[in-house]
Amino acid sequence: MSSEIIAVKGRRVWDSRGRPTVEAEVQLPEGVIGRAIAPAGASTGSAEAFDKRDGGSAFGGFGVNEAVGAVNGEINGALRGLDAADQAGVDETLIQLDGTANKSRLGGNALVATSMAIAHAAANSENLPLWRYLGKDSDEFFLPMPEIQIFGGGAHAGRRVDVQDFMIIAVGAKSYEQALEWTAEVYRAAGELMKKAGHMQGVADEGGYWPAFESNEQALDFLVRAIEDAGFTPGDDVAISLDIAATDFGSGGRYRLAADEKDVDSDGLCEMLLGWIERYPIISIEDPVGEDDPDAMAKFTAAVGDKVEIVADDFICTAADRIKSAASMNACNTALIKPNQAGTLTESKAALDAARDVGWESIVSARSGETEDVTIVHLAVGWCVKQLKVGSFARSERMAKWNEGLRISEVLGGDGGKLPARATFPWGR
Ligand code: PGA
Ligand code: ZN
Image (cartoon, rainbow, N blue to C red; front, top):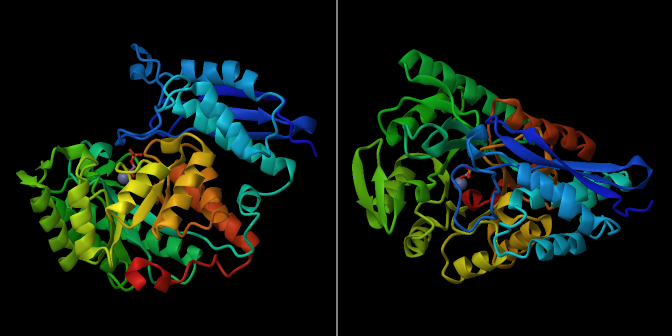
């Protein structure tokens, strides 16, 4: 069937924070369409593709009329007649059309929605699920290990605690389905525990509990207790992973830990985190220091990178060239892959390939502002990425992703969804 693009349509839809965002719909012959929605971050890296907003007073300045207009106007004009099956060619056209280094003219949000919609349309024209279409060169698939938030902090929870994501990874689970079951039990236990202790303040942006903890460490203590209360052995069954998102509370090597009422330098912050790694079953740490602190990142990785995942998010912003330079200084060992940081699927894949070339692990990740769009789950499965980070185990913009994984695992037919072997992760080696 022909996959020639007939039209690209943009529309304004709404995200999980109640803010406008861009949906793109690509039309191919015989009624085939592909559709995708741009997510949005709150704790963003400075090198991310530009999230184009209208400004002004409507919707707090978060309007996307210009970005939607770009899809309906220039993007539609430039893509009509191109082949949706040529993702690289279409993405290159988008990049050239925008013409800026950070996609600020048309908007990274307009571009990423279009780029993902192109992939959906091409897959639909071949009657393939997106993961299968993207994974044409693979014959063995698995489900990504879920990394799921239990407590939200930082920019996603009024800075009640400084650490942004207190997450768990069900390292002992035998299948994707079981990893979700175990997470559900820990999430429930954490909620009960917080209610009893009077720490509950609702949920944060990604569905994790919004804690009223007195310190960052108290959050860790509660997380360990929640794992135990749910009947699991911390570390063996269920381990802890953190996104410090340190760019948000520091610059120039100085950091303000508001919850702990202390100021620290890079060494002080790293020492604190290394202490946590010794005392808590922590197996993964993202953005331990700020994006402008690469030497500290490298020192931290040298200290614990042989057994702990050191994940770069703000620091590399899903960019292949940034990954190459981070690797040349051994700054971390894992890349977070967020398509909207790159702006197109081709660039996201290039970032993933760059991470693989330098021997890093990788994690496909959602943003704090999400929708019902489940494209990232298909990217993780189709591109054979071993880990997926989506936020918590509540709220449908999150659950839509975990549930999509269940559907894919059924198609793959492997007892609840085969997970990558534990021994292939840094924590299992
Ligand atoms: P963001 O948060 O989407 O607000 O950037 C997610 C993250 O930092 O990983
Ligand atoms: Zn992050």
